Image 1 (tube, rainbow, N blue to C red):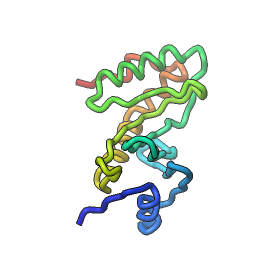
Image 2: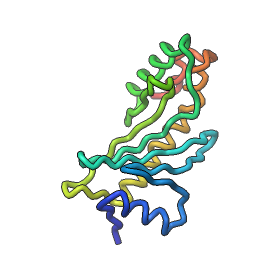
Image 3: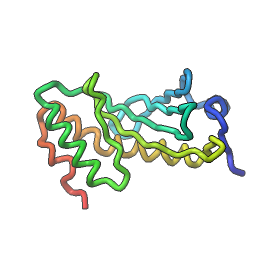
Image 4: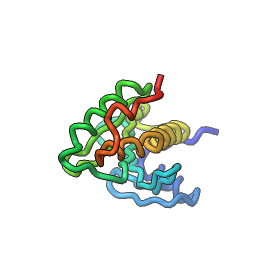
Length: 151
């Protein structure tokens, strides 16, 4: 049987029923994330005005001004190399993140498996590259190091 969410409240009801820790507020749900060394809070955004679902994984560090150009380069290199690009930078807080945008159906709904796939992909990608990006953000790694070993 396919589980379909027609609203953010449907999604939060399912999270509650499954015992998944979360917080919800006006079009957003926050979930604690632990994957490898990554410890952060995932955001699921359900905008009312467009049929999209966004999953955002903020990386739990910031960069200082002298290292921001290197971080920009590293994010651009990763986005070019990855099959699913989605790294970005919150310039106001100098904090990198990974984001996936999942289209919802014409009626605005989304299936559980699509939410799980988007969340899982976003978390795994952020966890895989978070440590390397942090190294660039603090000046310990060159920007090109983030793509070393990628085909």
